Image (cartoon, rainbow, N blue to C red; front, side, top):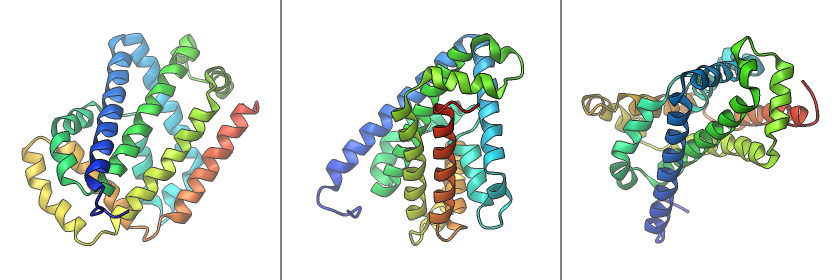
Length: 239
């Protein structure tokens, strides 16, 4: 379906509502996780551990001439240990404008990314609780694997991986839309003046990362196959 299809307004309203829902959930989980200093410290250590695992799993992609930009985008923007509260606030502030101005494909891409973010926050909250005091010292892989199985929810984990693919496919499609790079460049200064620098940076990095690959199929196939294999191994008892 193209962005100009007759039922696009209905699709737009539904996608905008879903985007708002995921943004609200992710922001609420982040606020709850930061409310208690000890829990916030433990949650940050978990995210750093997981970020280091991702970097190790995909180390070859991070140094690959064709894929390194996209790999960095996944680790720094789609799953990152850094505080994303500023970006949350910016997106919520301009959400009514974005839902009217963005092409439907862009709205869907943001929706997938927001759902992925909210689901990751759910799992991080559950993993932080399951690990507890074990996060007060350097986390062992065996303890992480045990907590993974304790939290469980295999269908949710599989959906998390599927969302990585869906987000990547959407970004890949958007990256090749004629004129979009020039539009983003034109928006840069107004966005910064309006206090939307974090959001603008996210959009530009995502666009450039996927445009630089020309096609993202092989990159996404590698990422998904590795994440699927790791999740299956953890559920099957690996440590």
